[in-house]
Image: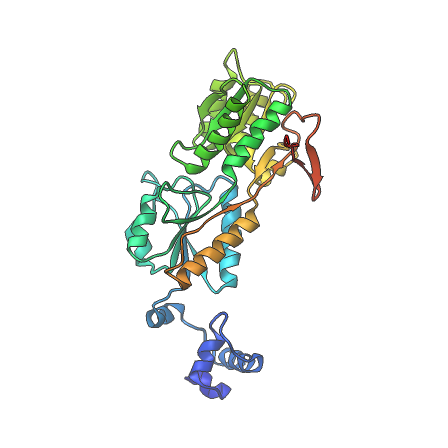
Length: 345
């Protein structure tokens, strides 16, 4: 009321001036902002949520932030949501508990929507939130059900391309380092990798589980590399595990990468681009994935009856120095090498 009186406008005009995306003339907005500054007024988002029944808060649940992929996602997602007038609230599980944040905690914050942005989270929470009327989006993972929307990278195709790339580089004895067994991302990457090799007459890869964690991946690498039939190439289910394998291979086994061991990761995170790793990795394009997720969750909030959608964002196998390069099939694209094999007619 005070701001409206000083600015010479209605209270509804003041409300529109502080509502992202609301229609208001630039001159009116400027007068309202000047009046608010002179009075020391700031909108109370909590009070507004009681009136509108909308908090303008999107919850994002992420269980494991040591993997560089997720901090980068959270930063981009926060910027994208803010541009649409929302704030991001991060939920992480308590130490020693199941990876899901507690439903009571999620409901207590009156969030408008929830993005499950970690492959270690179960699908049960998504169903519970839907029952409570909170739109839920799965990011970088899917569920066996069909009624929860999702945004993912090309996990299956990426696994197949990596198998084809390593085969073209002359490798036959290969290994695979899986993530979490019940993770859809790990399952699909493994299915693509093993499937292409089986279809093309290659031996079944040696397999270990790294749980998407550095310490578990290092232990798995020791088991693989200590074998008398150790693999010539290892595909790791994400870059975080691949860096652990590289450390163990170099500093504990004295192996040279890629001369003695080819190594491929998945996600194309910042460490993959560091010269000390120079990791060949299948990319999950962060900005297109985040843009798709932000647009989709906002659509679900505005239209609760919107149809379930599953968006898959195309990636590329980015070729660097950690794996033996095939004699052909690598092309330059936007300043980097990518694997583009010639498909048979």
